[in-house]
Length: 87
Image: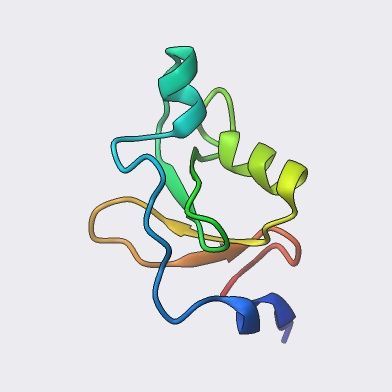
């Protein structure tokens, strides 16, 4: 079974979302999102890969912050971009 070493760096408390109202870049650009992801390293809110702009993945590629969690109501799963695993 695959494991993720990055999960050890996840803070006990989730960081405060930088833009709790939605995807930071979509809000700036006037574009739309499907679902939201919260970066557990810095609080960036980005849109998922089902969204046209895929800002959560772009944030990982630019910043190297590996783990996000769903920022959808009632969901608490986490994803590691680096290992491509739910953690």
